[in-house]
Figure 1 (cartoon, rainbow, N blue to C red):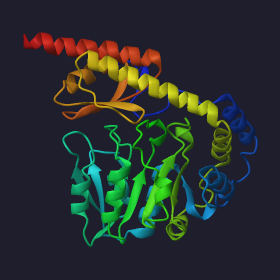
Figure 2 (cartoon, rainbow, N blue to C red):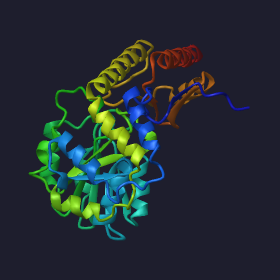
Figure 3 (spheres, rainbow, N blue to C red):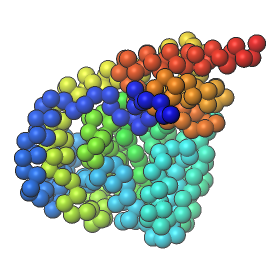
Length: 339
């Protein structure tokens, strides 16, 4: 018999539904659901460009950040070209590489859960067309600092496009977080990916965007699916951008809960490194497999990588308290069994 899931903490979703003002905008858009959206999302592109303080020709909008990533691969990759990325990381990267008929090149993380930039650079060769960085990193929450990113970009050959996935950048509080928009002019082979799925709580509506040089963005837009962004999603994103202060408060509350969750887990004996995302990472050799069983028994759905770790999305306070109670029991059982 399957146990009921009380807390969904596996997919790094927001614990909050869309704001009331956003839901109202969505409701108004539903009344026009019999009409097609724009052939290409020009209005939304212009709104995002204004918000990011760039020109519209530097913005590509797609079906979530993964949609923009796939458009990029279709634009610059030929069958048999190589796509390099750290591993473990976001599961979609090897899937997207396969969809573009590219050769995936996974590069192991460093022992402390960071993307190994030196090893990634060493993996680049004449076949490589794209190298992917996830910053802050999913699933470990680690950060590539501004200096480290700049040094990396200086050493990447210009025939290689750097796909910089910043899906979690709103949750980062490290003062060394890179200012990636300031790098776009210097690196025409850089595409910065962002999404409205995480911090903005619009995961089901599938809207993401990429920021890059005009020539690169033009190539990506040629791969854009006509009518690909629906009117309800467009209305929700525009309303969310108008509600920036309210959304920042929500993000701040998630960050506060993330830090509380980490402190409490440390006090229970779990070794949890600092995170810059909306999740925390419990890594082996801690008893992560036993922890996964305890979470499931408590009705918590987490992302378990057997033998490697558990990625725990930060939920609301009730969900996080349930997590702490379950993992206290798992840790206590392991300690007792060793006596």
